Length: 320
Image (tube, rainbow, N blue to C red; front, side):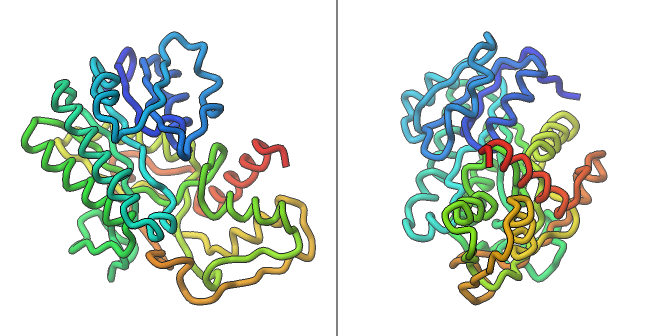
């Protein structure tokens, strides 16, 4: 089993949603951690608890700045590459966003690793790489893969780059195709968006699509636990997993939970219509997590439970 104790770990997107939780766990395991983030979506305050830890350092910089990246990543043993444009609808509006913040940024990370002889990378991919598959729940070996969002296309391109670098430069990778993640430190997503809308107007909640969109959700701390379990226990040169629970949660169900947890009454839902929330949105996602389950890990919370826990803890964090 791979031990993270005393490892020098470089985390891109370290001030982001998942990254900030990951860093806390890595420091608990006595790793030395560098968080690298341009703070476009991430927030430095998410890392406030760690600045006094002598094993932690923060670098504010962009992955497109290769000079700073190559200098900062030196002497690292392991890279957790979490940085990306996580707002899929934004990437649809500005078509070069996912290319730059996703594909090119990932190439820059891999090239910086190659130059510094760093051999291990963990990458957060997405269920969006599958597009709209004919098989659900969808296993990792499903194909061909035709994503319908620029975000999904970028993540698939990143997976291809990682595979090629592993083959040509003797690297080892762990790729996690994530379900939707919920919880505190959220920087984006439907839960945070709904909460912000309801704070402005508790009487009406506008919901994109018809509310029937249904996807699996993982609580953020379980997401981190699943990733670390996979890293410690999967030993192939190229490891790849669906990190998810079984089942899923409808958007309108999530909206009802948020309204209840916020203590609101008589809130009306206004749907924009259509089966998609936005162009590129996959309206129904089901992932087959049996591969990581068979390795020995499964989440404690199902999708609805993860949504409830994530909403409760996020509301506590923002002092609602």
